[in-house]
Length: 139
Image 1 (cartoon, rainbow, N blue to C red):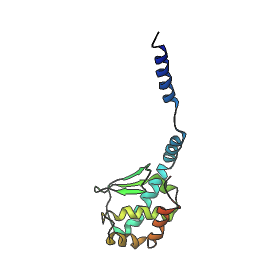
Image 2 (image 1 turned 60 degrees about the vertical axis):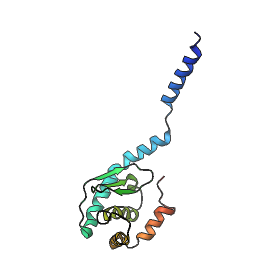
Image 3 (image 1 turned 120 degrees about the vertical axis):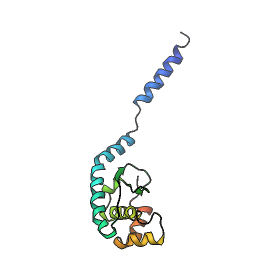
Image 4 (image 1 turned 180 degrees about the horizontal axis):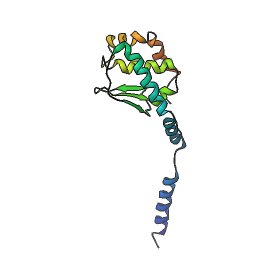
């Protein structure tokens, strides 16, 4: 039984890794699952409202559990939003939604793009600053 110590050590390590689960990750996943549907409803409703001013066509709306992005827009017209749009102010979520919607017209951050955003969110600079600098960071 010269390998007994090695076997016990390996089995112990396997057992340890199986039961060790980060609680923070479970909590974040639970937050995502609890807010995903509400975020989808908000995104769909506000996209339909703001699109009265833009008249763009999108393909899909997807709600994701992202760590560093509030939203994104693909060249195929898919609009992706972080589930946390359901947890922030309406003002901030509207800005995020309009920002991604405007990428359907201007797939960049040119002056024309920001003019499109300002059409419905005239104070977008302040909201953007709040999102970036302090109050509404994704955690």
